[in-house]
Length: 529
Image 1 (spheres, rainbow, N blue to C red):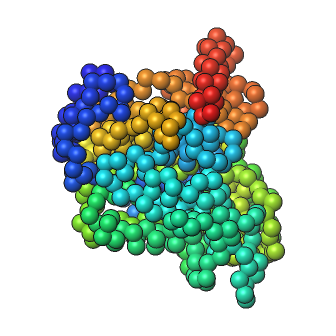
Image 2: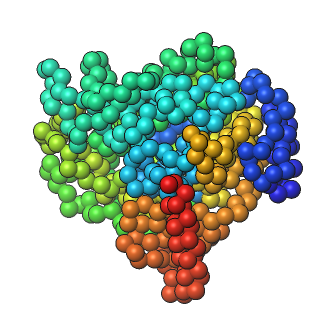
Image 3: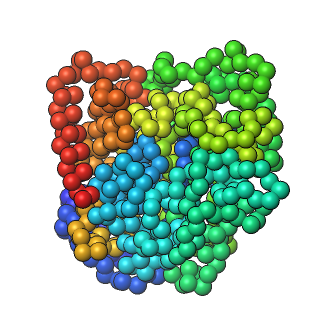
């Protein structure tokens, strides 16, 4: 840690009263804690949503009603260049561990986290009550990975109304296949809820609210990982939420996209001179749709908006609970999405494709490529791509009284790997070198504490990506990215959303960046074994 970060870390931690003394070591694990009592540690809420576009939230230019999330942004920091990994399970692994998915065995298929520790395991060492509710896209129960409680979907996606088998008097649930579900030490396969009003977003929140009332949680600082599966397909939402958006999307793809883009400019979120609406891809022609096809396209986005609306309502319930407990002023909150908007289609079992069934238990619909393009406005491409539309997430930090400029933007590149480094820094916890008698990969991220002070994060290493057919590297403002082995080069300082490929203008720079990426990838793969 250089002198700049040492000085500002000491200054900041003194301001927030954590009683920590910064170490002179380069390794966060050597941070010294002056006062081991947990009374001054902040509560931490990490909210993660699934497959949400960059422009969906009101505070990022969207028309969807998200007053609770918007309030977090208005009184916190909005990041304009926060990155995930372009896919659910590697993003969630990076977020939980502070290392790249390639370094913890979670880059090719959902599995066990190897050679790494979780946020739950680290924060328990300094007295935190650790809680996880929602989706963990892996083969381990988070109850066994450092969490005092875990409840939720231990799998990829599921039917929101019924993740399990057909219930008497109801249609067969639309689904891809049977999914795993956990409730503390128990794992269910399948999980068929008895409650006919079950809806995953509500269920995850309700469980978290009960945990927050437990005496064991009231007597300790808590870490709540609230990992929703919404708005990932299938498109399922409560009828009363869908009704709020009836007719809102009748104007079509380009009308909504243009309105979002103009709001983003008005918010100061983007500079139109360096972030124009991309010429390719553009959403398809709305005017060519008619009849049922037109009505279905309207309904898809109405349901999608309703899913995000319900997310916001549930986040509001959590904030209200912590506020009533008089703990909100000492609570650090993060909000992010695990990848960009999803343009996938699905081969799930669906009994009916009638429009009246959209959103019900028997359906398994997606938004499709055109609405996904709108959702990612003005970023290029979608989930599964390491272009900006696949990897750039809305990211909000909120910490009452601890942010120098509430409502400000941080325009520096940050990544999910930075969360672990930040929380180790803030709490004074020790990041281990060994776990289960095996070496642990060192943290890969950079602490975000300087952003709270409106200071530069000063990242010293490139950022890397690899998922499926795509990958990339970012050094400063230069980004080399590939899909299907075709590399491109962009200068994001004047081309934020990758409209102008300059690989033929700077072939040597591209070659050097590809070489660094190849070295990183080879080394990262060996670290997980």
